[in-house]
Amino acid sequence: MTYGVLLIGGAQTHQENYARGFAADPRCRLMGLADDTGIPLRRQELNAELAAELQIPLLADLEAALARSDVHLACICAEPERRGALAVRAARAGKHVYLDKEPASTIAGGREVAKAVKDAGVLSQTFSLVRSPVGRKARQIVDSGRLGKLVAIHSEMFFAKGMSGTADVSTPRRESADVPRLTFLDSKRELLCVGWYPLVLFQWLLGDPPERVGATTSNYFFHEHQKNGVEDFANLLLEYPGGVQGSITVGRTGWKSHPSHGVHRVHLVGTEGIETIDAFEPRVEIFSDAPDWRPPAVPHPEDPMGFWSSTNQQSGVRPKTVWHPIDAVSPSEFSHFIDCIEQGRESDVSAALAADVLATIFSAYAAAARGVLVALAR
Image 1 (cartoon, rainbow, N blue to C red):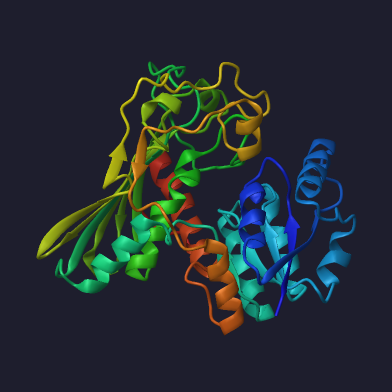
Image 2 (tube, one colour; image 1 turned 135 degrees about the vertical axis):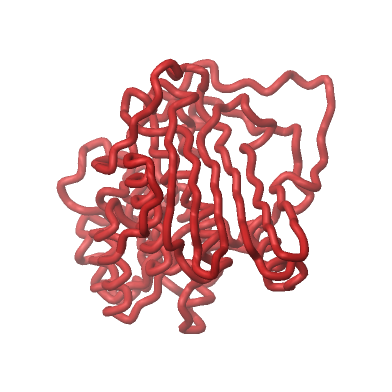
């Protein structure tokens, strides 16, 4: 069977990558790109740009696109503030739903997506890194039992993008429990953006969300984050059922802060041993007389942080070529979802799990604002 994929959201979103991921699976066909009515003109232009690049139709009527019998799943990469409502509409139209992280912009929105998926009897998956080499190694270690009973898990993850060193570190950040907006043209909430990955990994490994969470958020690297009132660095403490303790350190640290994409490690602590998994170990390091890697001389005016593949290409960002991990191949995230659809089984990173992670993140913001451990919001 060929699965028709409807794209919702275009250029300057992760759709640039996800669309190609689905298109690479021979079981899939991209049927077109659609979006809601009333979106800004620039978003309309960016949608048209990606549709043209992929050589697929730009569909003017989202409801009509969702009603098509040759569309089987919707890949939704609209802005977080719009994403949840679009996912609910797709599920209620009987389409399987693939979601960019995060599934919605509120805890209630995440729960609504999960409920709509369940009520409609469709399947869902949210983007994560559980199929990366780090995720697969962590699963193998935990399942092997060689560490004994798992008692603690820690992750550190930093994105090496953006021109850092511009933050005013003289004034400590004060977090607010009210999180009205998640993303901006030049910054994102990094507890949410980067913290998503280890939090999904932890719940995927442990089987449950945390019971309590504590957090701090800071501004150490970027003026852009400070002016928008969002953090570029965060620490989390997590208490999981059964007494497992978790901790996470995440953030965005700048183009020049790492020889490759940024620090990505997981530490597993058991009663019988400890193991560390590093995304860049083992690796090949190249020493040569080639010019040093440099960030773009002029950041892209619509994407100074380098969030999107298209804008990085347009501004001349070159790949970093010094570090080459030996194990860098991951099974396709998108083929995994097609496997789930074919076999009629729930994905391991479903909308329900994503809703739990979203609740953990917003509880962490509340904890950072209050300076105490808080129970996970339900």
